[in-house]
Image (cartoon, rainbow, N blue to C red):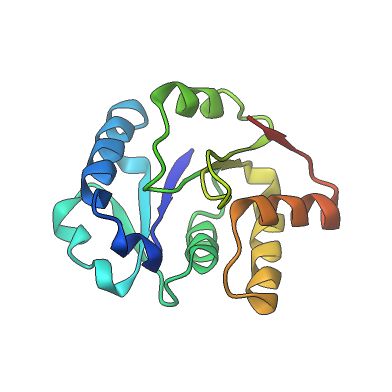
Length: 162
């Protein structure tokens, strides 16, 4: 399983971003291991490369959440992928709950934006990539809940809401 942190341009205005990301990365390194951590960053976040040397970085050219998610999922094709919004506070217990759900796609969000935490199974990953491509053509910015619903509607792939 690989963990993908998706950064997007709107996060630059958050004052506590570095502190929250640092805490999340340290927790994930201990729990999942440093070799499985990936981050999609915008060009304005190049200083993250020096601050978080354990992460593997993927470029988000457009700066939107959906495009960053698309790029990250394409890069991690061939693995189960746990997607995290780096700013949203998610407990270690919630991460453990997601990891234990390896047989189902799962989604959880704490706010109305729909960016939170999602688990994409290897067997269904190509459908999520294809659906995110379609959403990118239709709209510039969407969230995880819209993507999960689109995959369910188009391909009949169920997900569990945690």
